Image (cartoon, rainbow, N blue to C red; front, side, top):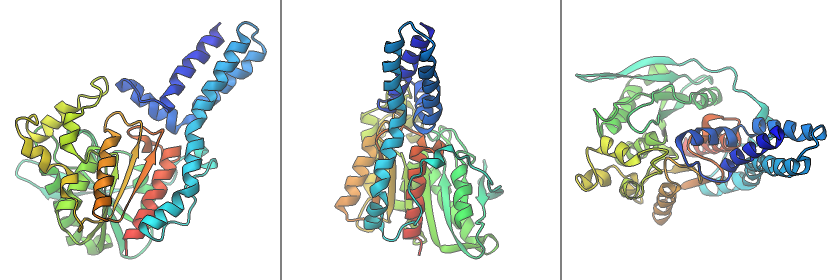
Length: 371
């Protein structure tokens, strides 16, 4: 009976690979289920094997266990299917792309080693605060392009040390990385973070000689709330040195986002937006429109890479669909990597199913837009 109970429990957990998480802690579990699936699949396999010695409810437990096992392995299968055409699709949308393989089953067993240690640099001092960035120097000699990374955290938390694995990976492949801290809500409101991105750009331009930065080639990359900041900065600063922007599951339409809030058991998205924008939509509608990257898309918009999981419960998938549609309407060079199984923060594991595909797409995008 214990075996059957455990197998049923793991079947319920496996549903997070196909359905949206209904609560905050289940969302965190969903990241594990979809990006570390072999761990969960291995536990179920052990429970299945134990059935040879357990007679009671053996058949029922075996059937349920096989169903759970298939669900846990489904993100790997779906990643493999997407990988088959990803290189061709990216090439058609962006131009020459990375020659690496988008997805490898063996890489699921890998760990991230040989990380690059960043230098902490102060890039701006205001009257009431000082902001720093973590600078990951390219491991390839010479003047190299620079990626500015804007962290997530609902505009009110998080810092430059968030998900640093990609920073080290890109530094080892030949890019400089500047992961910035920015002024946070509720004390600071939009457009303060965009102004901070502008200050970071100015600092990196000014110190490009000592930092070995090719000042003609910057790309902004943001996650979640940081993606909204990166998109807004890329679309409004009109800085010709910014060659592209990478949007990882970011809110692109703040007006629509307020009208369609997330599940309150996961996050009170309206309260988060109100803190960042200074009130409800009814009180300050102009602030919601002004902070929506989608409002600034035009025929002069720079190339954009969108990456989003369909099972995202913090930032609705619809944000990326709307941005993709607006970019299409304006004939902007862009690509939207859609991950049907993935949830918010899926790139926590670079070697997971979503992590591998997103890293490949990012590397390909950087190669295509950095000239």
